[in-house]
Length: 345
Image (cartoon, rainbow, N blue to C red; front, side, top):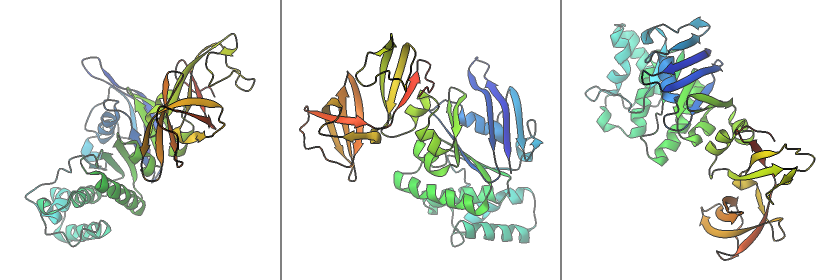
């Protein structure tokens, strides 16, 4: 199954542009994550793909067939929502069988399909239970099963794990990826959680204010962000950023020099480097004031101040120095963005 979106735009009557000329294409069996801050347009895009919301312009192709004006029921899409939307008075079996009962399929076929899907999802011993008798993870699997039983060409997930606690969210993340690999159906997954996007997806579309900032693999999104927004949105702790200027080929910051290999034109720039790409050295090139220390069991996060900027350092090494003292460090990887936020180096 392939999905191709061309020039998808959505503008509300109040003038708000939810989506601006979205182009996306996913391959057969690919898992795509749409990630971005609240209100960026990712859920709107998902609803447009599903046929639950109209677009102002653009084209939606599923398996090479134009589905832009097709009804939601004619798009062969399975959708899993944030709130599960299970019928509380129906058993697990009847909840999963509901789409087939609507189509009036025969009882034998329904029973076979429910049994097959329930085994894949490890729900076969729970078929007689009502939703209130299930855990959050089990309810989520029932919702998955109800979408799967329709034998969709495409799976859509709208923040399905946001109502779960952290522990259950981690286990369900693994389960969804495992199920996806088993069934091989192309999937589009909306989340505001960057960890979900990075750990689950084959490719990620980072969205901001209705526009795609970058569409790439998790590795490239993290290590080769195309712009400052993507660099700052992905990563925890957030990437360190320091503003500087180049005037007459000279930098106003001690953190960067306009050497021949940089060759930056005069203007304003942002230097960015990830907290884990910093080396703590007794003879480091840069000096910063240590103002906070946090221990996470397997690593330390240090908050420091340099040139009136706060930076984060992630390290497995404990600093013996007391707070409010100074440390020295080097950064071994960095990115430079121009005044527009585009990557230049």
